Image (cartoon, rainbow, N blue to C red; front, side, top):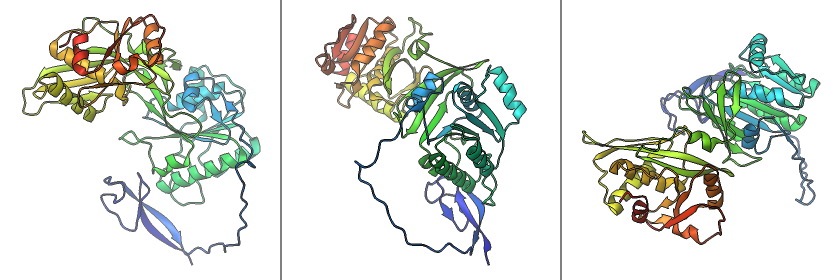
Length: 450
């Protein structure tokens, strides 16, 4: 006879315990263990002998990688060119950031049969949103359903190419007694969807809620199950949104898509560099333009710094879009190698546009922006700064230099400050002045910030 027992599962990492504890022993997060019930004593199916079937690489025929275009270029870019048959895509983001809007817009443009399963909204609400977004498609079918097994039955009968689940936290598998949104339901529903996408050869897009820390709600195993994990980034007070792939088995994870939220939905930003630099002021000190690579696309961004005297014992170090620990290292290099007294100053750093940069090629631009604010001198308006800064104050080379310089030339930049080691590597035939520097002191002198 089976018995109902209780166990506690960490909603962040999936760790299981027979008793509740305040801090998860695995992921070290507090108050993440939730109570769930399970059944023991069930009779198990006897194991039968298994005959393995092995294949060599030469015997396996290549898979058909023809992609389904979503009709939204920025979305396709992040996906690696489009949707793949038999794949499972997870999209996460803050409430109201535009997840459902983006997926519904894509569903209206896909030229294949698609089923949009809504577990949160009524059919009338979906209709109202589609009318606002001006979506008119004979290939789009809406189903209001929370039982995932019913959804699978519909897929078997209707044979769509794409299925959208909005959202994974609202559906459930009635083979389990747990409530929708619990760790067990999230894990089992996602695993079942993954199995059925391969078996029935359709693409599933699931929308996931996020926690207050900004990570996708549910155990981390969800991100390991799915093929693609896409995250919406951006400030709710800003109209711009950034779509970034954190995992992609079919493409590059460095690509980003940039959108603007309007009354008619999400609109693609075709030239993000121009957008990020559109409100620059030539008279502001502490402003330097640099270039970062997002996948195969160079982006020009403005780095802003503000240095003020500290009236307290511990000066502030505040960053937006840049690693704070990296800033501390660069401040130490500036103080040691250039003699700038920054240990008693507050330093505030901002990457304009809400984009996050972790590429070392922007180090020199950050240092120059800080020096510009400290000295209260402006950097030439049409100058681009590139280079990684070492602990010894040396300027190290950067990659994809030609692409970065071409993008700068398109936007009217006339001078680029680059590492000396980059000057002799390629013959860059672009009408733009290249000035090489080998150390941080030379860079400050070239920009008039010594």
